[in-house]
Amino acid sequence: MAKSIRDKVAVVGVGACKFGENWQKSREDMIVEASYEAYEDAGIEDPQRQIEAVFAGAVYPREGTGEIAEALKLFGRPISIVSDYCQTGTDAFRFGVFAVASGMYDTVLVVGFDKPKDRGVSGPTVRFDKVRGLPATPAGWFSLCAARYFETFGAGREDLARIAVKNHHNGTLAPKSMLKREITVDDVLNARIISWPFGLYDCAAQSDGAAAAILTRADIAKNYRQDPVLVKAVTIAVAEHPQRDPDFDFLAWKPTLYAAKDAYAQAGIDEPFRELDVVQLHDCFTLTEMLTYEDLGLCKKGEAKDYVASGTFALTGELPVNTDGGLKTFGHPTGATGVRMIYENTLQLQGRAGERQVKGANLALSHNIGGPPTTCGIAILGNP
Image 1 (cartoon, rainbow, N blue to C red):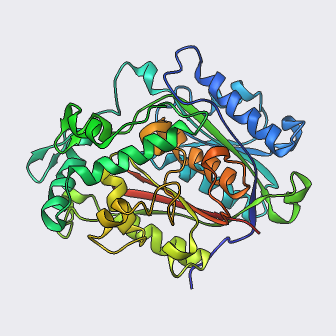
Image 2 (spheres, rainbow, N blue to C red):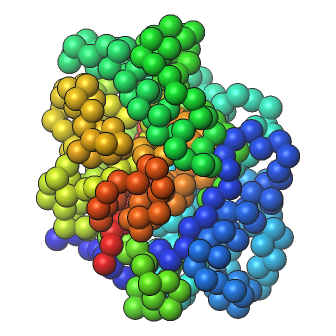
Image 3 (cartoon, rainbow, N blue to C red):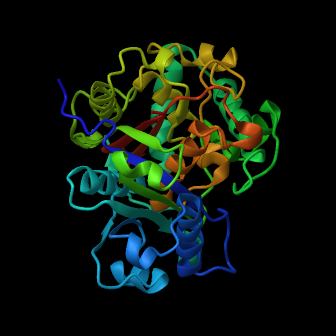
């Protein structure tokens, strides 16, 4: 049986700034906005006294822990920062959960943030490592998997387009999302190609942003609010780099397979499709979302296109996925994304998600992959 921290830690407050091209806001502005919204949500009136430690995530940190301390005026206490590809926010959350579960702290702040738009580039730093003899950018790398998936399972660009349409719709219902534009399958198919089969609408929108969560011991959570959300599982998995893995077949992400197995064991989940009520997963590209349905065990290998076509993962479907628009339209400030997913799932579980609310949501999963990918982080939250 997997070791678990199930039901030992609660989320009692969440916050986020609006994601987008936040030219008018500094990194510190975004950190403060997200954190103070989380404070208010948790009923924290004196963070200088009540917040005992901070666990942060940023892929492009400027001054390390110093900028967090300066922004929040939280001096004289431990502040840690983690940076590990796109699953950075989930890893920061994991550190916060473990710190509380260990008994070291009662109440901590987790904050993920990044401001890549100030870096003067349109996306993450490009790595020109070769993938089995082929040069790769992020879109180029994932498109290799799309081509193999299409050939093996008979999927096509229309299947990916339906995922983009779904996530664009959901994003229009999220007040703090970056993109608020309904699109059609034809819009996706006719957009300029980035790396075949990906067009513009198959690719996530990189943005500036910050998100935050307040964690505390489950036994004192109701001192903050009467509807705390409990952490059922949190895990990180690392796999061999696909370039050096002779068994990699371009049809599944091993880090997700590893992390899902551990997370489900921690949470006591045997049938994820039937037991989960809402899922936020890493849709850096539409193909990534399609593969992840299968890697998470939400459907069998090769069947994702049928589930997409039937609307299973739509907001009104049997298992809604990326209810706030995902990376695709909420935006992807790399270090903030994992915490943004915690923000959305907490709102869903507490019935506070407005027009995008999933009726009767009691168990929610969030998923990030990072790198080629070589890493994956999964967190599962649930109501008491």
